[in-house]
Image (cartoon, rainbow, N blue to C red; front, side, top):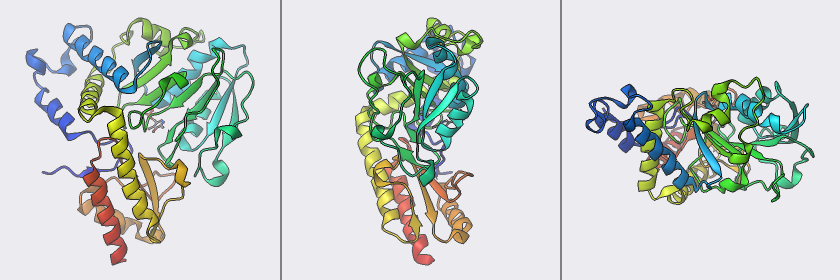
Length: 366
Ligand SMILES: *Cc1c(COP(=O)(O)O)cnc(C)c1O
């Protein structure tokens, strides 16, 4: 059996080396006589796995000392509720949350936040079909918002922030909260510009079940009284992400991915490769009249590339041919149709090249 090139948006492909290491360690982790899945989360073996994963992630993203890294569960969708439950206690009620509406996922986040506060859409690209990111200068921020929410890479619409929104420098400026699920670790970021960063692991960090939350210390400890204890960042932080049983195997897998990323040269090196991979694919799409991508050039995602065949009647033939060549899971999100190629960190350039070759061949044949 050979491994195919898997373009799934998530759960997504993992580096082959990581899978091989996990397989080799599956039955007996480093002479412990047991699998990681079978270990006590409080035992010395798992504690060492957890600490290494945390410190590797801190190093990879250059997370400043006044930020905590929390390993939680529930995915990014749970954070859509966990974030307001943790941040609204800092401001007087009724609270307002500012949202930048840039696509499917920021829209989903608004839906949950609206249960806890007034949601104010301060900028939106809905009118142009979510094909651009409204520039910071166009945001009409509320004066006393509890926080500003952005989704810095819209996995469905394929738009990505290529700038860091400036929220000002003083201590009481409005915290910026970012859902980075589908591009965390794909590019260098300045963590200090954000109040909270959250991301599910199953796109660029590992497998489903782990949610990473990076939160500035002063934003911890303001949960609303009804916030469940397992979702209270303070409880989670005070117990070093062991307030409840953490998703041990998902943390172990993320740790292997972090070590792999360090062997690749870290985030700066992978970012360079991601730029090259994305250029290869977008150049191919732009050069043809057969395929198209509607996103503004300067807002295109390096991770998720939606594209459309001008003749959508050929969609099924395109997908069947791709499958035959070992190019998997290219069907677009159900809300958009068309195709989507997710080319996360673990996708080798050979995979993108194989897709580009197939795009050209299919165009020639039709
Ligand atoms: C995948 C994704 C989510 C949803 O993640 P879950 O793990 O299903 O909660 C949320 N936001 C973004 C940007 C995503 O890509």
